[in-house]
Picture 1: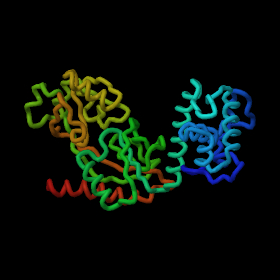
Picture 2: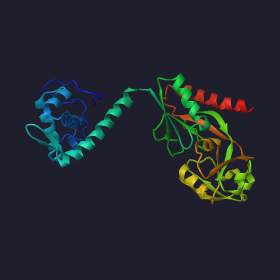
Picture 3: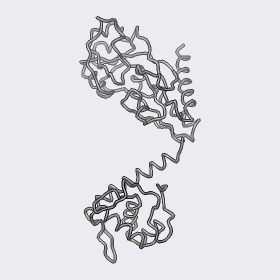
Picture 4: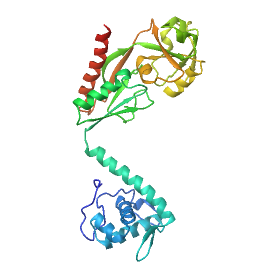
Length: 321
């Protein structure tokens, strides 16, 4: 696959040699198995430059090569893509549709090349609900200051590993009761639990709530990514449950007043919503916060991220102490 930008093919050669993406050897009429990125680059260049001559200059090939490449694309797709006169080149109806899809495919291919060639210049940290909670902004600021050469991206993904198992991130912040044995991980801190309730709930006027009181209410519970389980209460003294699917579903159920929810302080810091009030929950163990990563081929910035998170959570603990 060619890198983004102009190709270096010589005169008479098709544009973008080497960036073919083939699914077969044949290229029959209407058969996408012969489609190559060079075909799409050629079409876009013709339309964007307004003609075959300028497209050839843009692509660094001969005008004859541009004509052959466009003809090959029209043969593969089985449709005519351009209206050509001595002065103008305009897309046909089919050409407009193909052109739009071609731009998307080329942008995706260029992004793939950028991602692959950038190596470890980006660090993706996944999370299911609230990243580093109230430390998120400070984490981002310090990271940008101390590691300007490594772009930080936070990704929210509704899975137990925050997108790590799905290959969407390099590290993940995990608070749920996940089996950590398959992963490498580090404990970076703890967060106290809070009760989330509707702002017009009578309990919202109180400074804190006891855990045993929650057993009298209906509890919104996310079994997939939530941190709360019924094991917080003795058997026979557990609250009624309404299951939710993600953070937005959880908040919506609580805002109606029919449910309350238990969550780490990170959620209270990250999801301040009209109609939702958070109050400290007494008599409940804090939630451990882990950073998790794959054992094979860890990102070079892993230990720096872990150290920064530990420092932020530790500083908060020392301040409270």
